[in-house]
Image 1 (cartoon, rainbow, N blue to C red):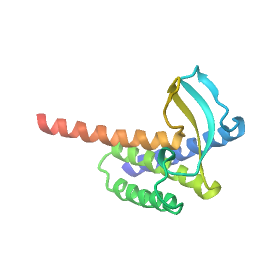
Image 2 (tube, rainbow, N blue to C red):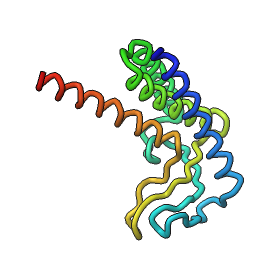
Image 3 (tube, rainbow, N blue to C red):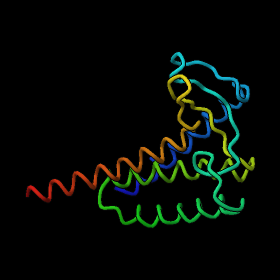
Image 4 (tube, rainbow, N blue to C red):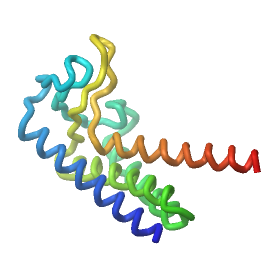
Amino acid sequence: MTRRFFVWAAILSLFFDQVSKVMAYGLLHEHVPLRVLGNVLRFSLTSNPQGLFGLSFGPPIIYFLLPVLGIGLVVYFALRSPDCWLATAYGMILGGAIGNLVDRVRLGYVIDFIDIGIRRCRWYTFNLADAFVIIGILLLLGREIFARRKGMSG
């Protein structure tokens, strides 16, 4: 049963990421922000040839090898997850990781378009794949914190 949650979370995360990138690429112009919620949330198409948050941390091959290693680890842990909560979290992480890897293989860079911030204080432009990875990690952390607190009180 948990495997179904894992597979569906991965498929849906990958699907929504790729559809959103196709739409962003078709509707937006590079580095021309489209205001969604004033200046707080904008869509601004960017190409990210580097790593997480646009950081450079090695030769280009590393941007392919690290995601493949991460995908392998996520699948390993997901197949051993004892409940649907963890399986869903791992699925979201997997879908996001594959979504960005698909971009790198297909285009040589990752399509980013979500721009959040206030005035000049802006977060790194990101995409739904990044959001799914972060949400999945937060679900894992939340589950771990909840399990520890429950164990302490029981």
